[in-house]
Image (cartoon, rainbow, N blue to C red; front, top):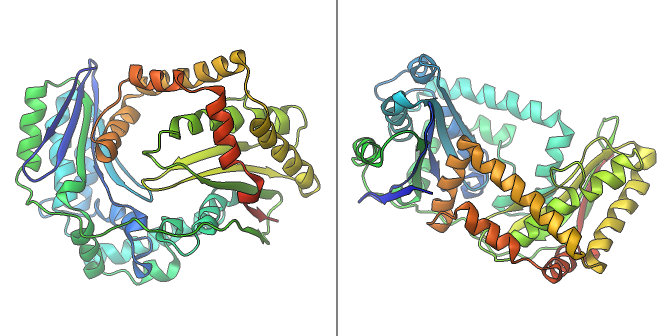
Length: 406
């Protein structure tokens, strides 16, 4: 795997992989998300992601949106609890156009007052749309239950009150405090030489003044399992149950990924999908998820079902968790589980846009890139005993929190 890694004097890092093909991808990942917000800034990281498209010192909003779309490319962005990303997909001949545009909107946005007021209404509509989608909303509400009173527990979009009170001064203050050059990675995958990408990188990012993030998102708190029932005007009951899990740098993280996939991952042959949907017809959508963060993680199981099937569905779910806590996987079961995850991994490496963003986050968090061979070795080292120990820690019934929309 031919990967170039380079750091500028101002601390901005580059990771680039040269691949053949007509389409290329690049982007900026910033180590700042919603957990870096103070209570009165709730939703600010996501709001800034929107505002980066609203004008720079040399481009109006229309010119930003048209710059890549005029040549068949696409500009996009997202915000999580721990990072903000602006990325693009385009024809390889348009690399200079894409890098210049991304650099411009990240470092030269002017945040016009008029656009701020308009975008508040857009975000408020996004919040209302989200509130109308209980199958999505319940995940944020569950993390708010698990991380009670902590910034990481707050949802990414913000509230009507917080968004309404945003101002240009608050926007620029948040950026100055959080968007340090030492917290920024430029990532790229495409058919361009190392020499040319380095030249473009230095030209577009080298003149940015050195700065440091002046905000700490780490916090210590005591997790207390909790259960909550919320009355919702929905046809189905929505239920989620889970616990704290391992952070991004915990060596048990790979085993947790494997265990999560066995239980309720993307495969139709996951244990929860077979037991709840295929065998008993109790749920259309059932899944388990593992979300690792820099200093903690969350494991959860979600399903939606008719009210008369709720108790039976919970009972079956708990029985599946108990099976993984008490019964060690046989060699054939373990081999199949590993092969499935390896297949997903290989497919992910073929999705170059996703791989580009993954490279960026790896440099941001670990300052290194693991190739597929390294990841496969980690998977192969996992034993049935490892999974049993993880299951007994994370799936311990007394440690589980639960949220029900009834």
